[in-house]
Image (cartoon, rainbow, N blue to C red; front, side, top):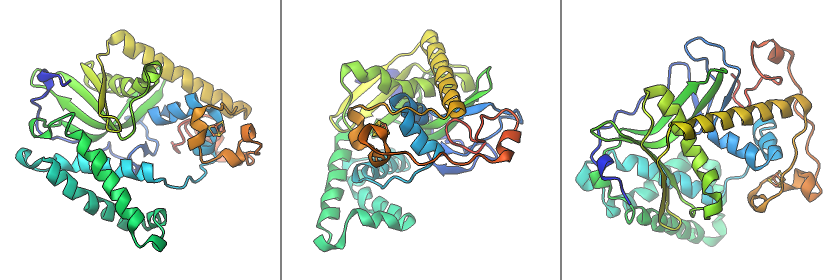
Length: 324
Ligand code: SF4
């Protein structure tokens, strides 16, 4: 399952975000200029994925910025990602299932201290039973990680790495990579953790888009095409991996460009079509969705200053919602 050539890795050298880039959320950074160059727009794989899933969902999340209540599944993912990030701060020999298990509750408590509203996930009336059950589920999912990798033999080069690159069309591609491993021969492996289940074969391409996107950005940043991209699904203990080539990554760049053009067109026309699918059951905005009898709110009013910003899409936001 693992690629031996990338098991012996370099020491951690996590790079800070570029100057001027202030993180709001690990997955969503504010807009930036790259070396003083104005960008026409910016796109992250998560926002591109939203648009490809449903243009109206993209609008609700990125243009309207409607709040979405936290879910126990999403917060479980946050806790597990943080534990897997911090696990590699320990000496290699201490990266055991027991140590990881012991990190779950303090990580949740830290998250709760930072975001007290998360307490609403677990009402008091059950005297903590729901929270205890949920913490147990976090531990169970985390334990599966150790059936897929042995972190004692992995030294990530980067964790939670912010990456960005500017295409020839001045589209800023950016995102945050869970983990980058670099083998002694320079081979790069891009790793992403998923706490859900691996997709069916027909949906693997969509799942791999995110990591091909990161591979493209890393190729542009470092001049080396990552040898392997790897999705680690803890929901059903499966690793989905792929070895991209130049043609794959150029196709990914064309796809990102096409998505951005489609987003820009929707912003100009105001036509954000709903695209009902099985994923609607997880959508927080069904009550506002015409596909379910709802009515979307009016679009936010554009500010005159938005149009004065050179090179930005109408509305003043870059298509993935950053303020540029
Ligand atoms: S309910 Fe479905 S169709 Fe409607 S906005 Fe959400 S994802 Fe799109």
